[in-house]
Image 1 (tube, rainbow, N blue to C red):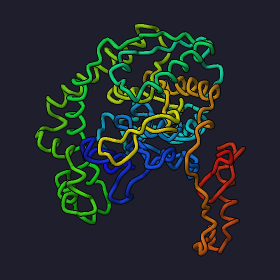
Image 2: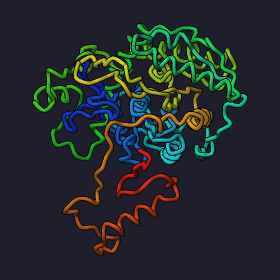
Image 3: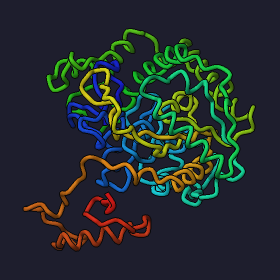
Image 4: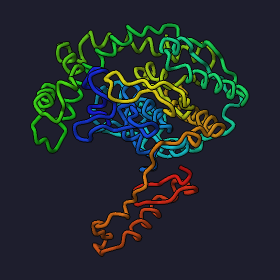
Length: 439
């Protein structure tokens, strides 16, 4: 993943999916592709079949954006549906843990497994149910029939540029398909207010103050801390002093700004910024639009979908929508090191809803996925060919009784252990991964 969940540098000061530990993660659909972030490696690994699914974290876009760039499904849950205990934080008021997978059904299986109350994260105590729903049962091909789905154009138009026309063309075609499948699409179901500059200013205050407090609490909870770093100031010094961190080429602008702000997440300034953004995201934003127009969900291109749900803690499900055409001009990221837009780079469509509406969103996403099967139409330029069993000197394996067993036996044990969870059609097994035979 991107180092510190992309919360270290200004946008032009680093790149998605880079860390001093792991190097640069790349997308699989064009050479040198920006994988987006911050859950970059989770999305790329799943897209290539190196894993059945993966966990990802989102503060503002970090599940849904890498999912769309890797042509897969991502679920950003309602804040409080999944525990954040001992996950490196940015904001306790925004962070969510959710699954990415190649299909809606696989993502729903993973969500059912990780959702639930946790005494180590008291935000989960507000869940309105004692037993986690079986989200797989929400996968309904007929979900569009009778549904009311809104399009908040003023939440989309402010992000349009020369690179978004192919996405919007595919989005308009998707709206036609949704209507034809029995849904009522309410166009111009706009937000009452969507002030992007004000939202961004408030977000900088909220995230900066929450990160300082949350990071100190996380570090205090570690059993081992070999460098004795206790707070953001210690982390910043370590980062600036260690050449592996590539400072100052990869700057620490987000940290400098947070520390220079000299306020805490308990201060009135931080509280007011959070409440202003919540009001814009809820009454003036998503929940207001859902209520005014009597909607079951909103639908947006994924690139524009995440801003208001991030601050309001509302769920999003993104599914593949299409990819850039072969004659698309190449566009680089702001740092000039990765390909942002190019032929074959995927993009997605997102369904957004109220708190705890994951079942509704999963059903709509599944209905769209099954009618389009976009993922199968977009192929990565590179696919894995190496299997773990191909290692010339695999380490010895033992069973529960410490008896040596073969790799084949180990593979059979793994396969039996989770074979009831996932459909095995079109898949062949390696020890730790499924590979889609249709790739």
